[in-house]
Length: 284
Ligand SMILES: Nc1ncnc2c1ncn2[C@@H]1O[C@H](COP(=O)(O)OP(=O)(O)OP(=O)(O)O)[C@@H](O)[C@H]1O
Image (cartoon, rainbow, N blue to C red; front, side, top):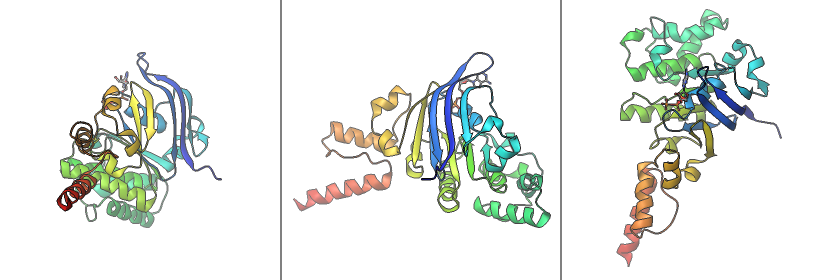
């Protein structure tokens, strides 16, 4: 069978120049089409891991393979043709005057002619739901719009892999949901492989396929949301909490006599179970 791994990490250790050990013993494989969330408390190493995956950190012990090739041996241009990192703060990434100029920067640098650049800019802005905003001044955009322009800039280069550092940070509650829906659509409909660092523990299980949990620089678990978000004590050990709906059902099942079963991770599932129980009682 063909190896579909796009990224494969075998990292023994990485310490910053001041000696801070940021990552150790990381074994992680990301397949084509994955949507993976890196969850972990502050300082657990999420941003460092994203930088390492993107080739921005190079002096580590171990290897990162991109499509089977060691990224340390690839020219930065070869990395950036396939993969891009969206920083947490869009102001660290955007630099042009208008939206269209910013999104055009990547494809223009890749040598496409004007009509192809314009086509890519328009398509990328549509993908991030910013159609018709090309003429707008970057400085006049909201924080959420700026984040979407950053993503468009990478999509316009045709990246198959997006790395995102806390894409929902600084967004309002509706904006958080909209951002994750947008990423889920890019993943499902356009086949973009996504790895994102996040603290959005209530929303993440509704959108992502896999979670990787980091604690103090170590990868403690990789699995589906249903596999990992079932045990409050295990989550507390890595300084995380369950999604609130799951926490509520854990208490109902363990303390209030609700029937055993998997923990619902979202409102829709929880509602279904409560309605079913209610109907069952009414019938009796
Ligand atoms: N440039 C640096 N020099 C020294 N130590 C650093 C540097 N950048 C990060 N660190 C340390 O590396 C560890 C991992 O930090 P990192 O930013 O990767 O964590 P994180 O999980 O992304 O945190 P957060 O959720 O707060 O963004 C922390 O102990 C942090 O203090």
